[in-house]
Image (cartoon, rainbow, N blue to C red; front, side, top):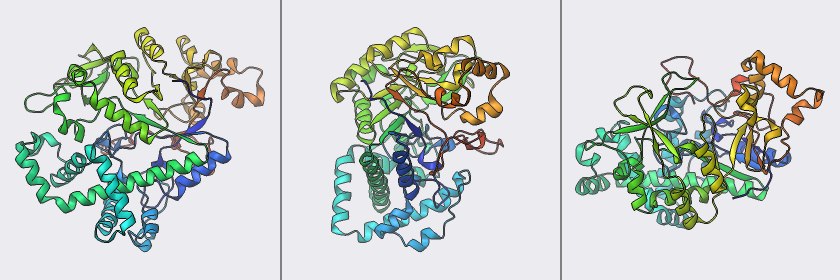
Length: 474
């Protein structure tokens, strides 16, 4: 699918200023959309918006379909009358790094309070919208709220450590849990209603300003998720519902042990036999919520690194064929055009490039990468073609200014100087203007609503923890 030429900024909503210790879909999100429009930017890219799992990473979610409650704006709930403004105004409104344990303690109770108020006193119009939402999304919503409620009941213990009858989804045990948790499940449904109503309102506001929203989905799902609990037959699990093999990437220049991500791997043969119905549901849902979608770890659709689950590192893995064209043919038959582009960074073999080209899915280029070894020239502007989505860096990189100030090697500095020789004061502008492209995304990890670009390493999105005691790096 070809995209119109455009430029924009990646800013995950959690990076916006907001009350409650974390950015959300509140006033700052609308101010940022206004900034994009005034700067004549046509794209706003976000990271995955699902509920957070281990490490608070947006790429490790407890559902491929549900929304992250922490992104719900309490201010907008107060405007609707679901919670008192004074309760919200009492929250701090700083822009410090997100302290996720503190945010969960402070914000979630207020969200549940607002949802409980809605259940008790929603007017007819609001209740009608809510009932329509539940009816249209029952296919994922009911399983998610039950999983979410049970996860809370069992103190966030992984689902395969719940009582056996619940872990194995015994029908009688599921029915009993539903009956015992009716009120709690209603509240959790309302929280999801809040999320998607606010998200669609923000998307509409963006569309009115000619801003298209770019989403991001991880190829694999978290083991401790509704998806694996509900559909264990689609994953490589043992009879005791433990992962048999897990995902990752092999050792390389950056990591002698590789990366052991720990996500369970799909049973692609079973998915194929079912007509890839789970993937069709997933992609239909993301195309309902975003204008364009970045496919993370695209090479995994061609071949993926399979690691025995009992291995502590990724060293003793092997490459295994993925679904390749077959999945995307079914997706195109079901959904029509595929508004995707592929994250095809790192060590990419010719078969991956060939798959992407056959599917007519744009790939990515990252300007920071272009000044390293000789093989990195494909990330330089003069090589860009109309099937590239171009970035200055990704959420895993330093900001462009931070990279230049402290991350670039002397060799990279020399290469930048040679490449930009003669541009003088125009170099920054020229460097950001690829000669041929249809869709270009130049983005920063952390962007203030008032401007972009003059940020050092302290503003990057994905930070490594300063202490081993801190879980995660988001």
